[in-house]
Length: 287
Image 1 (tube, rainbow, N blue to C red):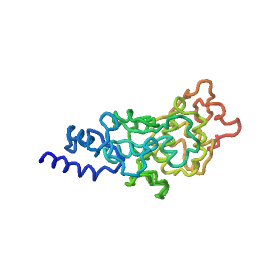
Image 2: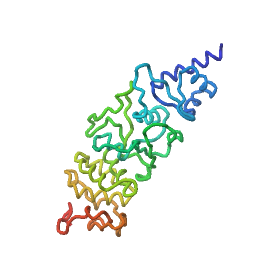
Image 3: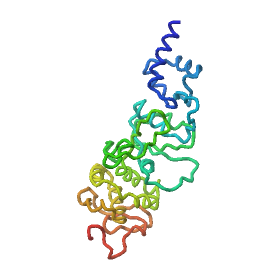
Image 4: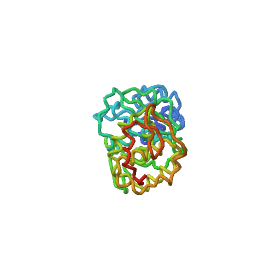
């Protein structure tokens, strides 16, 4: 009787902390003095659902949307807000959440880009239509400059409440558009195409110059910074005039990137020929 009371007393904070549909792993449960025998008992009683090895979910309430294949946000929010994993959503995924990606994903699986080294092994075992691509934060020296909450839009204005499908509305931790575009450029040319990056860049008219300065100063990749200015000069958004390429370390000497490409006359990096300005057009700085 005493043992059952102890199990129930430990279950109560679990139910208080974990919203319906959210995930917790065995390490999180054990840290709260819920031993593995009790975990098994909770699953048997229907208080938890076993998802994959070492991972559990608090069951959805009756009538709630249970289409978890499409709600990868729940898995990420569970990692960020409950279990304390130091990860953020970035790259193309973050840009899409801010409304900067406007084409259909024709693949069977949606790709979600996560950044951070503290990623649990069970993430790859989650079933569904989501493919998680994990990257380190090395592009910015493992720092989190330019990482923000999804609802913190430009000038502090709210943007998208992507978590409206759950009862507890925690904002996802994501790259700002200014950081995300550099993370996306870093995927060139092996994992992403110039055409996709170019189409996304075309819609980035509202980037914040101050934020761009901060992420460019922190960016450790000469390739990424040079390519950023290739696209910036190509599209000439209003914020471009506030950025001086000379203020950032763009390295020296030409950089090979695309086999059979042409060298950009200003930024000395090989790109597809359509991204090289025509002779006489010059660039944003008059070169």
